[in-house]
Length: 106
DNA sequence: AGATTGACTGCAT
DNA sequence: CATGCAGCCAATC
Image 1 (cartoon, rainbow, N blue to C red):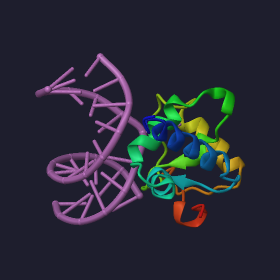
Image 2: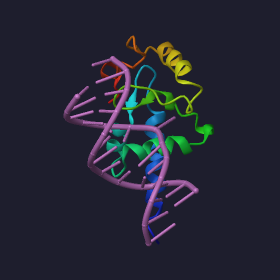
Image 3: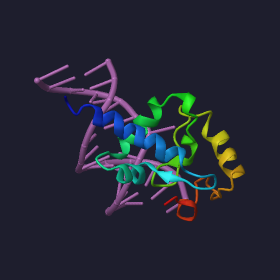
């Protein structure tokens, strides 16, 4: 049989990692990609985009390496997302960026 | 099969 | 700290 399944398997691994990110912590796409291995940051983004809402993935805890949130068209709106993250104990800069260096999940 | 796009990253300005 | 440009890699059209 072909190993085409590997691709889906990595996606499942991404979902697992994301769902394991505790409140007050954030992770970057590239970090997850490196954690899973064989994936790129963009694939992680795609994985979350295609992720079924039934999984209720805390994708709002996943940010890019710059500590910036995803564009408006993604979640309920980054402003709303920022508020939610702040409620989870995550701190931001005045510019609205996550202090990723302080909250980066390992 | 080839071109385009993108929930990215890193460096430069 | 924000914005811009280039590189990379896979999914989508």
